[in-house]
Length: 475
Image 1: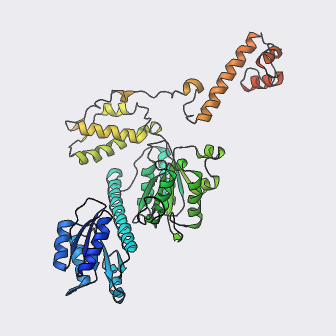
Image 2: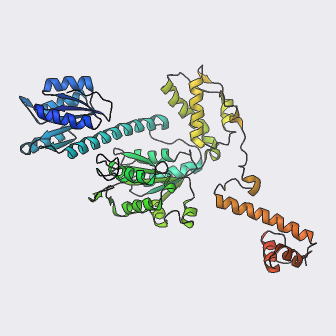
Image 3: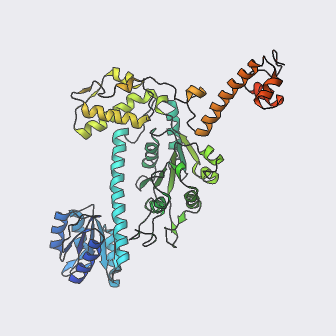
């Protein structure tokens, strides 16, 4: 039975009983998997070589064949495939030996539909994560030079120094910084240079999902727990067991989910959505945000107890405009990355362009720089990057943000902070003008503004219109 419908992955079913091959084939093809079957060692190896399945269901007892030998041959043919042994009660010992030989799991006969789907789904997802993590490890080494973050900026060196001191502990870490400043890269550095590096690094963007989807994403769900939950699915906490869970944009999480995260951090266990079984995990949590969480706490939008649970260790990454001396190092790393990706022979960049890059304000931070170098490498026709085509605005000097026109400061993108500062500036000018119109007579000015003389005097002192020592020129 061959089913080539595009779906979740490829399954090879190896069993000498036609009825089992048929029933399992129907189960998996019905769930969207591509399915092939084989009834012998020779047929299994041929299908494995042609089909390159994501998972193999292998009967421990094939007629005239030793299941362990077949397992070894399949592992040689498709080393990345998940192999799940099908066994009877009398062969459990052989199945345990099979796991020692490289099988991922075993399923007992009679085969339960839910159990086999859960085992295959979970193991394929873990296989995918291992592949992605292997790529990330390789990329981190290539772009950062033997798993290091290159910098000449003291502030960034201090951050790395702190990260190195705590990376082998299980302490939670909160990374703050503007969007695009490298928070996820720092989280990856901590994981891939720590004792957890061989386990999974799982990232979740908390701002990208609705509450219901985020709950399912983090904690998994049981079959039938909500509309569309056609099968049991492990969550990111479960998949990150023994490794690191990176919670990006933690400030965008609802209070309900914050409470559930707090419980996991405190008790190290949880239940899947719709489930009752408690699942224990050993997960190192690294959270990141570009929000002012302390302000969110004052506004009742973020739990203070969770904040301190996450902020056992805090690391703040400065924006790129405050680490312009790192631009040559970053540019060199991105050139190496993208010349390999596009098969270019670029050896460097004109020095004048580095100065041009260092004159930019970088509102998009490192992510913006990476995008610019990506385009420059892609469009470069020689060995040296000579220009940034279509990027004439790159020479823009750093200028105050629009809010500075009103507040004289560049940082307050928080609405409440900005409104307070704009209000204060307006109030100061308004009071000074009214008092001037009444020739320094505070009583008449206060009456005109509808406030008491005492309130007016206090505000004038606050804004430096008069000093606390006296009010010369005013009556």
